[in-house]
Image (cartoon, rainbow, N blue to C red; front, side):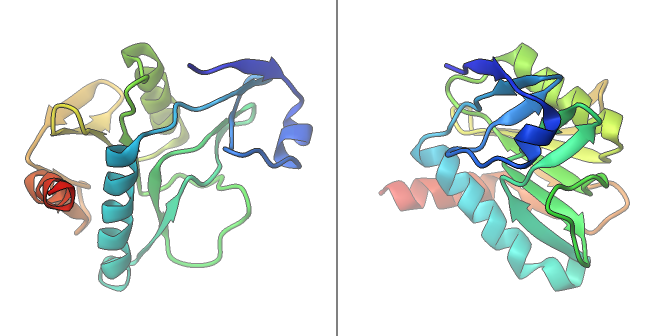
Length: 173
């Protein structure tokens, strides 16, 4: 279960936590950490994106601090950024944010994260659910599509959800 405490943005930006925490309007909030399947999906996606970085003109990061608003810092599971040098804290909208649901994630909290990323200007948010073996493509804060192939509109970026979960199932055998 997530817990919280109060801290200034400056103190947060100059602190390290293990595991890292998000900063939401003065509140330091623990993230729900995934279990084995969460970690495997995150690793698989990172490898997939890394193999396609040059072709897609992106760079992949995991668990990178992203300042979505002046007083809010989120830490997506996986994000795709434009190629080139990046600051310690990402302030330009990622091309894609991917969230892998953890057993303790709640709809309201996940929805708040999606809203924050779209308010920042992120073009696409993918939500992957290891339990139901499904994927969703959020194209705006009000438009979600459940799909077997997740894509970023106007970009060559994609993943086949069945392949991702098949790789997860093979690893479990």
